[in-house]
Image 1 (spheres, rainbow, N blue to C red):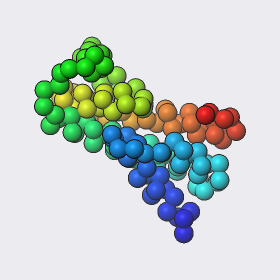
Image 2: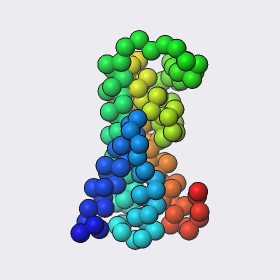
Image 3: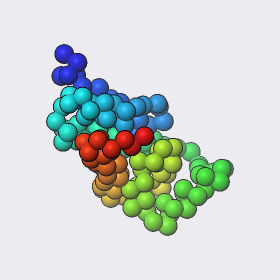
Image 4: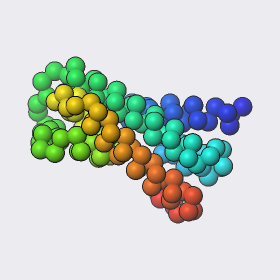
Length: 141
């Protein structure tokens, strides 16, 4: 029963991990891979999809955000996004900063297709490296 639900739980965890809500998608992915509770490619795809959908949610929320101003970190992220555009979302996997970059991409109304491409690539690269390290038996923590 649990094994059949594992991809769905990973999807939910990955989605939550990409929003400002707490999530544990990396821990869950490594646990499922280590226990052999699903095909690695399936688990990698599910984690990437959930995290990408969570990031896209942040982008959409950014489109409705009021004027962004204030803190130095915010201004730095805003500067990166204005300078490099959607490609900055390759860093969307970073804790806290990645969420902020997604919100700023929405706030700046960057074109959705490049945003989604780079957002997805950034998420896939992170989970891909994590999957590879886990399957190699390399302790990443």
